[in-house]
Image (cartoon, rainbow, N blue to C red; front, top):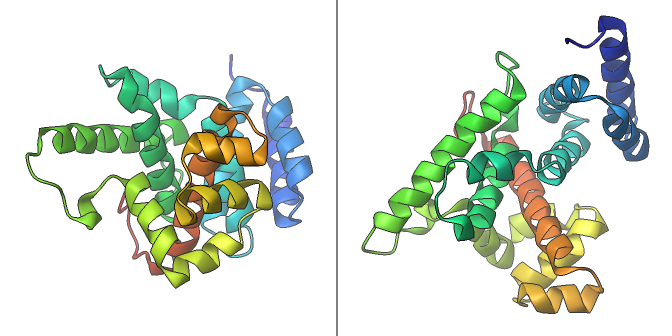
Length: 222
């Protein structure tokens, strides 16, 4: 059954106001209270807001959180890969690619359809790397490895890292700048290992969005 138009419009309007106001708490409440069909509309609204000056950072943060926390990306990746051990890595690659590509989202299709197209490309890239007999250059390495390397070595990226919410900045710095294993990061921060892995994946995606959006030419380069 499609969502009631008034209810859906009210939710989208409330989310938009919260994002414009920089009110992440209210935005997260609107997302949490939305039904499944309305939730899809809200994610599409976030994707459009992510490409606008003034709302991009918070909209990207919220969208990456939602896609990851709801397991949307993992389900899509898991349905395409026989190798279950690769799902985490490819899912992180997808989150980074989504964040980098958000300025190109125009709403011509459902957000889930758009995300699935990125999943297909990242799965294909993973399979191609598995078949490669020689190491690939950095620009062809999987997005999570590329982003980790950039965070550790490039000043412009570290400027973007410094703007992250502390919740994500701390684990990303410990992992990608200090080089600690995931387990040590979790112990240092007193957080569950799975939580730390998710926060690092989201943090990397947000850094990618901050450094890629200003450089992007029109069109989807995901």
